[in-house]
Length: 149
Image (cartoon, rainbow, N blue to C red; front, side, top):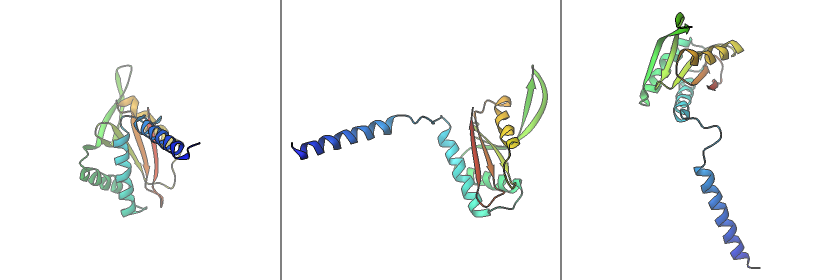
C-alpha cells in the first residue's frame, strides 16, 4: 500500500470538500446578512466606547454616526403607519432603518423581555423590512437579538 498516494488522495478529497463547503450557502443565510453584520459591528463599537448607562437616544445618535462613517444609508426616527383593513389605525417611530433593509430597536434597560421581542417582530407588518435587530445597551455587555421574517 502506497501511503504517499493515499495521503495525496485524502488531501485532494479534503480540498475538494472544503471548496464545496466554501461555495455552498449556509443554512441560516439571508440576503441582508452582510448589512446586519455591519450594524452589529457598529453597535459593538458604540457600546465599547460608551459603555452602559446612557439613555436610548444617546446610543441611537452614536450608532447613526458609526453607521454613517461606514458609508451606510440610514434614516432616524422614521414615522411609520400601521394599517388595519386599509385604514390607518396608528403609527410608531422607527429608531433607525439601515439601507431600507434592516430596522433597529434600541433599548437601554436592565434586561430585554418578551414585550421587546414582540415589538420588533411586529415591524414587518408595517413595513416591507424583513430583518429587525434589537440592541440593548443597558448592560455591561451589549445584548443583541436578530429577527428575520
